[in-house]
Length: 111
Image (cartoon, rainbow, N blue to C red; front, side, top):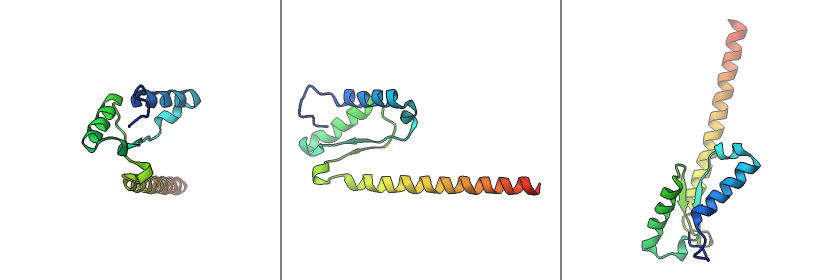
């Protein structure tokens, strides 16, 4: 969020990472992605939210996004909670899919 070099554009950096993912494995871009905007502590408080929202809008970002100061651990707890929820949801979906597959297999054997 607060680059050391004012000539560095965070949106351009995000697009560069997306291009690298596209080269490496285009399927990676289809996976869930989160935007974590670090170094919020280097911006005045009244500027942080506006700058973050402008970047999210410029990127047309639809996935979750977070504003943090990693060095001070500010804003990191919501990310931890979101990661845990993400894995819990993945586990529940896999269990449900396995149960559905087992039920279909049972129906085909009996039907």
